[in-house]
Length: 127
Image (cartoon, rainbow, N blue to C red):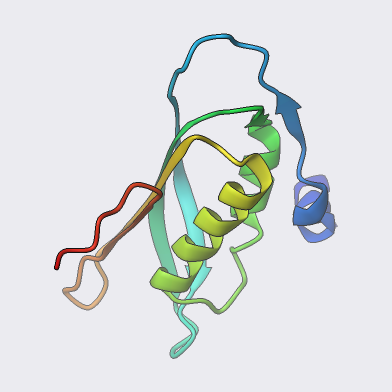
């Protein structure tokens, strides 16, 4: 087993490395993860996406290698576009407890369908 495969296989989201945020200012962190992959729960075919993560940290920030490894754990999982982005959003929201967070999954077209899933902490439901 190659070292990257081993790291992904052994990655435990409960132990995802986060660091203290010592900054006194409010600021936005933007992370782009252009190589997201998961498998369609219906067909098993691979789905590819670019994940856009933006958040305003409070007390914690995510370590960049940790977010990369976490995202790569989806590679061989059978999970829908919607479920994967919601899981990433909920995991980061729960671990980091940011002041604001947005996770967008821009999935490559497959079968003439292009899907963009967005979860954000400031969403307002129309009445």
